Length: 291
Image (cartoon, rainbow, N blue to C red; front, side, top):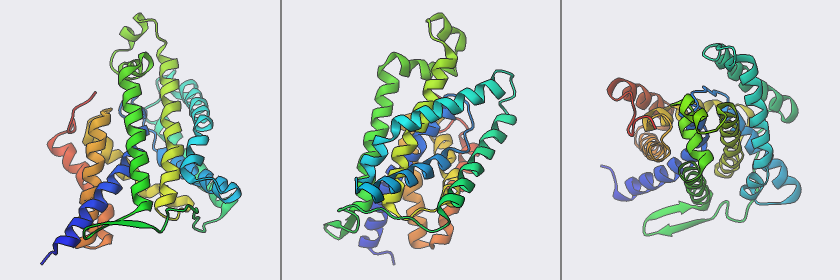
C-alpha cells in the first residue's frame, strides 16, 4: 500500500524537479520551438554553465546562482557567434535540415570532449550555505538544493515569457518563424532577430547550468541525459509555448519522480521518451499548440 507521506514527498519532489527542467528547456523552446533550429547541443551548453559556476564558486566562493547570472552576457555573445556560423554555413544556403543537425551534434561532442580533456571525468560539486539544508512542512521534506533552483527557474522562465510577450524584440522573435515577410515589412531584420534569439537561448543555459550543479554533482557527459527530456518537454508543450513548456516540465518532473519512487529509478529515463512518443501519436501539436 502506498503511504500518504511517501506519495506527497514524491509529488513535491516532482514539482521541484519539473521547475528545474523548465529552466533547462526554456532556451530550447526558443531555438527549436520558435526558430526551427534543432540545437541538439543545448544540454551541452548547460553543462558548460555548470562548470563555469563551479570554477567561479571554487575560486571566489561566489554563490553558484550569482555566478551563473554573472556570465550570462558571455554566453549570450557565444550564442550570437554560433548562430552567425550556422547561418553563413547552413541556413543561408538552405542546408539547415540535415547539415545543421550534424553541426550541432558535432558541437555537442566537441564541448564534451573538451571538458573531459581539461577537467577529466570526476564529478564536480559546489559549495553554498543552503546545500544540505532542508525545510519540513508537515511530513513533507523540501531540500533547499531543490527549492532554490525551483525558485530561480520560475523567475527565469517568467522573465523570458514577459520579455517575449511584452517587448517589440520579443514579439519579433515569436513572429520570425511564422511570417518572415510580415516581419520584414515591420522594419525588422529576420537574421538579426534570430541571432538575438539564439543568443538569448544560450544565455539561459548559464543559469540552468548553475542550478544543475546545485542539485547534484556534474561531469561532462551528464548533458546526454537531458537531450530526450528537453525535446520531450518542448514537443509536449506545443512548439514555442513558454507557458505550455512550464506545464510540460512539471508533468515530466512529477511523472518521472513517481515512476522512480514506486517502480525504481531505472525506469525514470524512459518516461520522457514515452511521453514524447505518446504526444506525437495522440496530439502532435502539443498541449498548447504551436505559438
